[in-house]
Amino acid sequence: MIELLDAAFMRRALLAAALVGITAPAIGTFIVQRRLALLGDGMGHVALTGVALGFLTSTSPLFSAVVVTVLGAIAIEVMRVRARTAGDVALALLFYGGIAGGVFLIGLAPGANNATLTAFLFGSVSSVTSQDVATVAVLAAVVLGVVAFFGRQLFLLCQDEEVARASGLPVRFLSLLIGVMAALTVVLAMRVVGVLLVSALMVIPVAAAQQLSRSFRGTMSVAVLLGVVCALAGLSTAYYVDVAPGATIVLIALAAFVGAVGVGGILRRRRGRARAGSDSVSTVPQNDPGSVPS
Image (cartoon, rainbow, N blue to C red; front, side, top):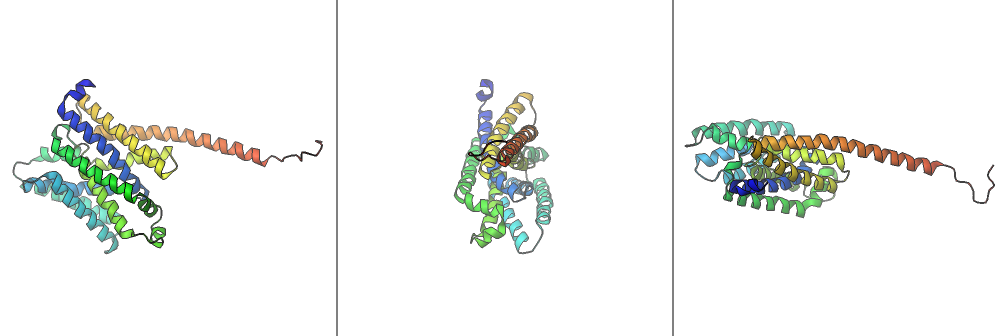
């Protein structure tokens, strides 16, 4: 462990991974609840175009990725509402357009090559700079601040859009807010996990937490805890075994999901027995205290 912390690039990567582990499941809880689990994948593909645009224009890939993914989030919401395009069709358009734009622009960018693209696709520990960590910290603060401030409204929207509209909430603004926060989360996570795998960290810890908790707040808390543990454990394992960090983090998250399914099944059976025992006691006829037993 001390050897792990001795390396400056690993300290930067671990800090970035911890921030990703907190932020991705936090916004992922709303996305999963709205049944938009593939939204992160769509944003990831669009972010690839932003990264390539950054190399082409010799600007910061993170900054250009933020701009392009936020525009992508706005575009998908406009297509979903104004053009009456189904959500899965709008996501498919993002998938194809994002990956095609990224590959096309990276081919035109001077000094960039397929290895550059691969580092952003699957994550690269050694490429995380101090500037990247600062950018990730700012983006994480923005996303978590929005979740804390609009948490109740977003919860109502995710439970039932019609009820939220009837309650006077700005449904269109809140839907767009979720998309933009997902876009920012993809950008902050792409250095560590990679744009193709970041969606997994937004979905799998939440799916695991749903096996262990029945409340929305409890699910988010457990998901964030699992996200941090999986991100740090995966990054440490990748350092010692010398494998891709993004893939390792996702595999550990999948193992956590399998474990949560087993533990959740045991908890549900115990609750079922406890409920059955309580019901049987309540249905036993109570003797009148003044009567004589037969």
